[in-house]
Length: 299
Length: 305
Image (tube, rainbow over all chains, first blue to last red; front, side):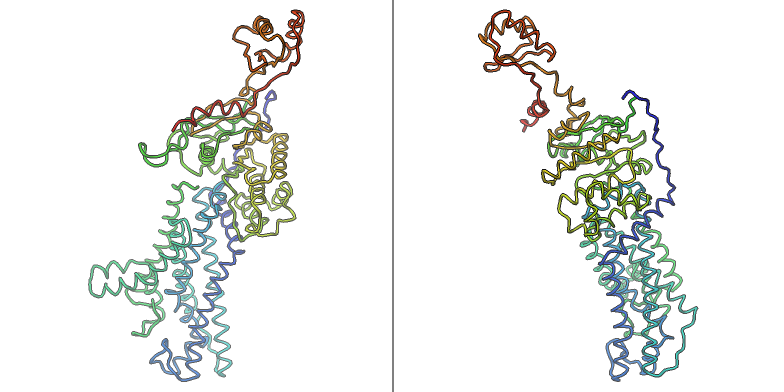
């Protein structure tokens, strides 16, 4: 070239915060338009409606005892499906199947992109690996928070329908109770979603990570807690596990009513300790994911 | 002033352990200058894509370094100024082509209006609202190029962009790259197709088995032109030719003579031959194709077990 270059490259300087913001916006767009994500949300709402309202209402009307309400009086059964019972009903299913579904969500959000090659494309757009992971987990967090709000409105709607059908006077749940339930639900679902995100990143694909994650959340932790009743060291170990913390936090809110309480809802550790354990996971899981993604070769 | 857009120094990637592993890229030092179309040429598996991945910070070099736009490869400031299509387009299958580009535009922090321009540029505007998974291979490839063009990057890296395209698609893609070059865009193009590189690249780096064999302009690589002469009687024509081109400058090829002289000396050669009463039947300039040069360079290596 003979001409003197007049344009000297000035590399784009973007703050880390700006990069995380850009990544979050991008991830929200692609998550929002992903059918699989809406299927997951739909499954959660269906399960919430069935186990929280439909089965209990049918049991109440028929006067029979279903597996989930054995030993409860008709009055207390009705109370759980009234608006005042929404905070408890909202979170009751979260430690077990709500968490499992969010784990699936986290795993597909993180894992699918390795097979599609979309992470490869994303990593060459500008934002650093750290920013992209933080952006993706932030988008996931926003989606989980939205899920809880939608579920709250959904449950309130169902309970109002039941109240109207039964001619019951509507007693609204306390604001404090509702806020506490929403907060606890957020911690629990978010923790499982981030755990899924880490697993999806580790396995570089959704299949293995979903499989392993579900076996862990649904089977292994329960088995370990069972062994823990016999062996004290195992019990101590289970007290720091994510499922125990999630179950204990919800258990501290809804109460653990003997052998017929919802699976996964436990009282292994105190509510306060459960909150701190979950908060620790909410920090550790994304940090571990960032460390993993930063040092990884992407093909 | 030649500004270096890409510079690698002894760039090396070893997979597995030193004794048993595979050396995918072996001490590659190459440079791409601003405003040129650089052809990165080599057979499949030669180490092209691995080298490009290291340049983009997708994988870490085992040794050596790569700098892009004067900074270490892979830094956010650098990747934001580079558009890339590396080993096949990677997009979200459930999104439309347009939405895929919008997602990437958001990652880049640029407006959505560039998406339309990019789709137009690769002739995908009318299929932009179809899902990526319904695209043909060629359309996916074009969407990958569109993504690389967004935001007017300082360097565009295209890894085998004509892969999977039909002949018309290949011609369109080459025309697009030529147009980019015409606009002063710096393009790093990897290819295993010699005619492609010969047609559109200014400079070429030839890589085989992870080693950069040669880096030069296309013309230099093909070497000087020679003069092909068919004249009778051959033995006397040879003697005269050797007087003109030197003893080492003439080769006999069948009933032809090949003279290592520039094309401008053709009239002089003819004049001398005719003055000595030799019949000149044919005279032409002969240029080696890149293909010949390439096989000359790579064949001994390929013959190794």
